[in-house]
Each structure stands twice: as structure tokens, then as C-alpha cells.
Length: 267
Ligand SMILES: [Zn+2]
Image 1 (cartoon, protein in one colour):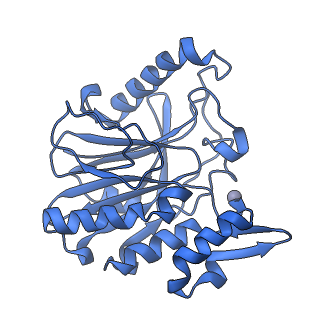
Image 2: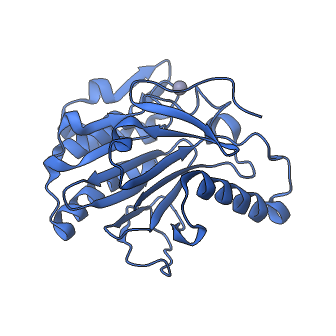
């Protein structure tokens, strides 16, 4: 069943193809040597299936659909075991396995970096001069640990990337509208990012709760290492607001097959 809505906006385009739906950044589509997407909910699988028995099958089916739609090989998918760390690793070959890693970088062709998300922030980085890519999973813990910035620094230090050439795309994530936290988490953000002198728009108090703008924080951290403001592109889409079409942990809880997948590769 296709979604009736079209989530396209000035920065992203909503594609419906080969039984899957995904978003692509208009900016990244300008580069013909890139493969990328951010998948939406697939409506033709039964999400009430038993986790243990069916989870692997659903996951494999979804990967097959993604690979078909993007015309990439299943074995080219590099997927780390993500645990909300600040660990970013460089991928050299398709036989590597990554444990407790939340960011991947490569300059090799036909290695498609894949991370999964349900409210957490996807950050895709591309250096079009040296042809280096990074795919980063930045949940609130990753954001506080500055994983997006660390990935950019690793590209700069290891691949000769000039920060002013980096194109950064910040994908759908839980927006300030719905990322509501208590005082303990608010205090962590306040302490970590007070040096930006932007706490007035990073954190907003509503009743007894606090709303945090993680997209803005990630933008500021990328700009801090020299990424140009005009080269940072946001999807402008909140996963919670659009939880009918994308997986949101806060809106839907933990369900089978419940992740949005961000793919980034060089071809
Ligand atoms: Zn929202």
C-alpha cells in the first residue's frame, strides 16, 4: 500500500519505487557518483509478527527492496551494530564488521554505509573534491558526545577534506516540537552547549518540560569545524509529526522492523 501523502519539500524529494518509499536530498542527487536514501515505513509487511522468528526475514526483505530500488548489491551494505556511541570508523572493505559504532566513513566505491534510525538524527557528509562520505547516527546521546562533528574532523584529518567543501545533510529526526525532556537531560544539553550562547533557541521551556532542537545543535557543531552554513541542508521533517510514514520510537514504541534506514555510498 502506497502512502497517500507526499513528503517532498524544497530540500527533499519523496520517491515511491519498487515497493518501497524513501526520501532523497535534492542536493545529493546533483552528484551522479552518489547513492543515497532515507527509507520510510513499508506498509506491506505485518508489523505484528513475532520479533524473534520473523524479524530477520522482514529485515532481509526490506534490504532486498532497498538494494533493488537503488541498484546496489546486497553484499555492499555495511551496517554497524549501533549503540549510541561517539565512535566513527573508516570502512575499507565489505568484510569488516563494526560493534558499538555509530558513524562510518569511506572513500571506497561500492561500499554502501547504512545506519538505522527511529527519531535519532541522521547526518550524511560528502566531500565532493576528495570523494569521501560519512553516514552518522546521532541520537541525543550521540549529539551530546558530538559524533557528527567528530566524523567531520576525521574526514578532515584522514582524507585531507577541506571543511568548506563538505556538504552536510541532516535527515528526518524528532524535532524541537516533540523532543521533550526533563530537567536532567536538559541540564546535560545546557552544560555541553552553553558556549554557543544559543541556549535561548536550543532549549525551550514548555510547562514543566524542555524541548531541545538537536538539528540546530548539530548544525552549529558542523559550522564550528568550518562547514559552511549554506552547505548544511535540513530535511525539515519531524519523525514524530510524521509517524504514520516513518518510524518514531517516541510515537510508536519499539516494534518489529521499526527503523528508518539511511544509505550513503559512492559508485
Ligand atoms: Zn514533531
